[in-house]
Length: 221
Image (tube, rainbow, N blue to C red; front, side, top):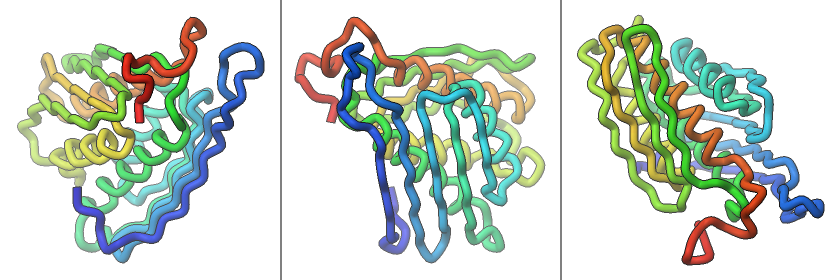
């Protein structure tokens, strides 16, 4: 993936390796900022949240999708983005995916104790979408969502794939998105974001029976 213009980036992750005697990590929080000549983005993510959001990207439809994603995944999410929207929305949408993915990667740390896999199928009226994730450190996107319409309002529907690719790459995960049915592009995209949220909520959840990482290799790096 193109990394635009050698960005300046500041990252901090609050994910101490403390188990508190209960095999449960301390609050998993990350704050990531990234600045290029095209975008300036700051994200704060708390994985173990309640779905609280404060989102401003300058792209209203993306704001709506991120709000839905956080609420249905029970992530507390703050996104503040400024981009070259006078050109188009591509850089902003993709770069938000990059920074959000890096926030997940930082907040998860070594991924010790997480269930790793998640799967959810979500309907929205006529639309039905499945998301399957493996937060394994291995990167792959299978995007099987065909949208006939070019736009939802002013939002280009092709940008959804760019966002998902950036998110999968930077989180370090396999992501499969499969559309089973759908006619309305708004419904299709929203079902995809909600399915992704539910799947990532499962995959990032702490498994109390697990010590270390869920891998025969001993690492999910």
